[in-house]
Amino acid sequence: MPESYGIHPIINIAHLAKYQPSPAEFGNRPTKSLNQDDFDKLPEYKVEKIIAEQRKKGKNGWCIIQYLTWFKGYTADSDKWLNQKQLRNTPEILDYWRNSQKSSMHIPNKT
Image (cartoon, rainbow, N blue to C red; front, side, top):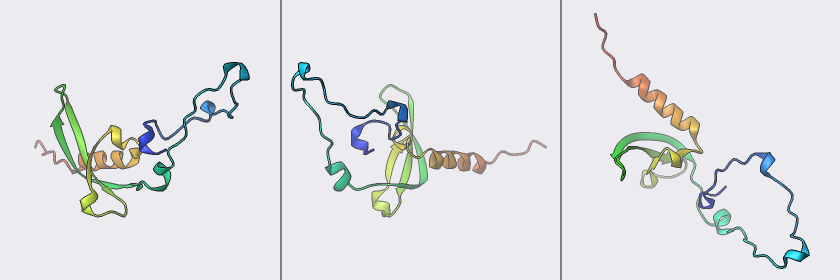
């Protein structure tokens, strides 16, 4: 699903139903068509990997973690700082980043 739709890209089959027009007694109802530009003209960005992390203070005072994201097939000019919600379609890449950061932390031995 294109990001502009604002819904999660994975849909459970239980939520799908074959279209059936409204009964005539309801009259003509407005319909909404899909924006084909989302499919045909807008570029598709696929996350290659996360290359950095930063923490910022949000409007409500909470800490927001952002990840510098490298997109497959694009140059460093296209890298963007994205938050966890914006990376919800790439849980494996986010998990890999977090695990690599944990393993790279040096904990001194107490001997």
